[in-house]
Image (cartoon, rainbow, N blue to C red; front, side, top):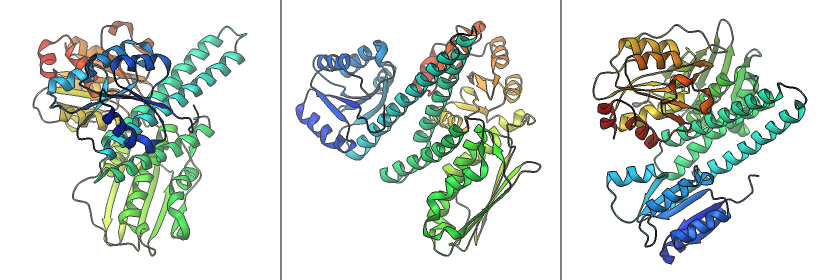
Length: 484
């Protein structure tokens, strides 16, 4: 699918006036809007075309929204189709749970706010388009591998491995996008959309550099130039950069790209890049570890924020949790000075102590093991909103093993692959302790140890309600009851 190709958005409502209003609201998206007035007509259209998003009314005479969503999900072609419910009646909590179990991804109450509806539909349209592009790339790569190795016995194994890795990378990328969408906060919809697009674009620039190098690494100097290019403008001389040539591993490159984006965005809004007299000096060195120094001067007077924002949280979680590094922020009156340190690769850091990772007791205590910081932040926030006490989160197997041995746990969420290290030793400890757990992964079921065939496996990107349902199916009834 090319970026300019239109996708289909199916609008389902038994009231023509409401359909017309949805059409007017979504017209600016410039996609193909298909309107139907009943559930039966909706099913007929779905059998004729691929649909990116289904926007449907909950209350309809022949098939209500819940019944229609269940029928859509029963068809293999539409198991991942985004379904958004529109409801003019008050829904109970059980109605929301039922809707999510039927496959809904969101609810929109009536009266509909046009900007919110348009923004929500756009997010899922963009995800659909990106997914189709990733699938096309995956198919192309699979075809090339099969063509070049068809005469060799090992060619099929190589093709399978490549396909799985591409699928894993695509799902992880979608999980990161999902996390950015859920974690981003803004005063209004315009700023929200701008913030989400900026963060995804920053990661996309890093992905482009990595793709050019076949995911073997990215040159730090090029990455710095790419991330700061939008801010140079007519005062490019105000931004100076210097440092030795060094190549970052893929995970490191993505973390640095997002960190630079957050720092530059803050500088453009509140710091040195917000005025014509401000200066930004960025330097780095690589011995003994990679150290990046960001220094602003000549801008407005700065002071430490009262509340830690998304940017500082992401930078600290990424560099500290995933790479064993650190991020130090010095909010000097003349300008921010930030020092980032990390290993150029993935370090063999000493495990953290259980005391430093455990949280205060209270309620069901859920161990969270996930090595992608953004996904970890999103899941931690979601679990907290559901009323659970998070233990961790941790990104290393050694940390997880210590917590399982030392902490009283009610359940656990385990990412299958922690930077190339499988989490199954932690699963063994949990099983012996009779602590229920679920796996999350971007890989297929073939990567799950057969000993854990009965353990629920959730594919990335993970839906929070799917996680709730998976917990409710675990063997300990008291935990299942508390999560239902």
